[in-house]
Image (cartoon, rainbow, N blue to C red; front, side, top):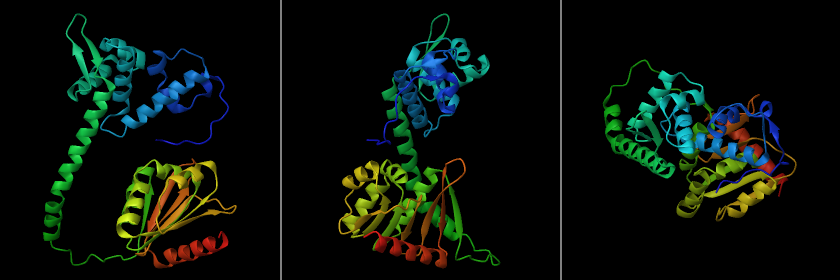
Length: 303
């Protein structure tokens, strides 16, 4: 279950007040882009469509394909020209998108005159996309050992210097999540994290905290976590089982966060000028050690 932030006052909004992602999905909701104002319930529906679009975007579908599918799913069988006109794309491009969706088993055609396209039921599409992703991951896992064996058989270049301490910039929450899970899995006995309530709820909605609980239960990992107090962070901490570990609420301090394992690695979270979360992974001893000291000082000061 996704958990969001506290609700804001519900009110109607004009078209000019909509966010870019809401404007992008508008034709899928209204069948045209000529509406100038929207009630709170309509805004909720548009927001739901944005969430669906973002979820489908995690599969092998581009934005045009998603919008065409959602349009057909909402409004039923349509001619290729009608779809293109409603979504503001050239007729030729609209037909190409429909053909790609048909090849992926996401839409089908009705053989009548004029020919129309119809969406496959949404539940079936989700099931098929998830299964396709699962099979692709399974195939990659099956080939992993062989690929590693091939890689190990390659001769090492003589003049390549091995850098022991490095930085890696992590752009996007998906990239951060992958490296964060690697950081966790690389821990042997302890893992420390400082994280804001906003980023804590993001992690709650990923498999990361489930993996934390698995490491705590199966490997005896000792987790120490600090976050700022809010209804959101309180909810997450009530759900989280960290066994012999402990957590503390920060007194006044609020920061994006950092994560440290016991193998000399850490990830530092930052927020850029566009309010997007970035991460930096590093194994620089001096940086990791300084954040260990910072964690211990915060922990002591908030007990």
